[in-house]
Length: 317
Image (tube, rainbow, N blue to C red; front, side, top):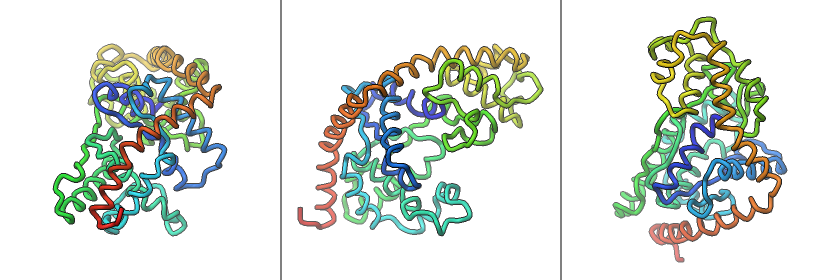
């Protein structure tokens, strides 16, 4: 649900306003060990989520990253432009590698450069990202600016801007309001899955961690109450309301009243998507066809950019 509220639902809105490309980043996935069969299944599941949520493959481009080799070809050129000091400042690597960074894959360290390639290979102008990815977008801007300057090509690559808008940009764990909702959390009760049944949705929200106090009547009253703030944020993201608007209705009420209302809203919003995802996953050939068609469209945009970049660098093409 965190991915849906923080990203996918916004993708649906953006496809009507921009020439939109939505990339399922299976190359990024292998920076940590993956079971090959599971990776293929998860790639299709993400594609099914995009389709079920309302992304139209005729309007937007949906593809898996590994099917467009221009991403990795441009990645090497960008790797030779990026600087070690830039990468050493990336906090995401420090968070993911932990204390045992010497055993982390090189891919995990340099994956922000591949992310820059994902963006610049389409000369993207705007990128919908979460707060935790803004630093990586800054790296893409730095790389683009250095190429433009080094080769005296001021407008060769645009400097992409982040799109971070509306509620639901950061959904936290249902078991710990200080931690982001994540698939990697060992507790299934910490997250709401896109394919959870209505009964599972209700059960998880009912068991979500809270404190004994009623909801405050002002946003300021949520400070120091991470679980309460998270549930109010989820309600707001599902309903399209601000925290203030949610508290105007439920402020002063206990969680015994608020949680059932949140569960009803979650079921009404997510259950139709879950049902459509299940239907789509039963037809993997259709999903694969959508991804192949999307990859062809993506390559038609990316290939000329890579050729122009190689020419800029001095390669014979």
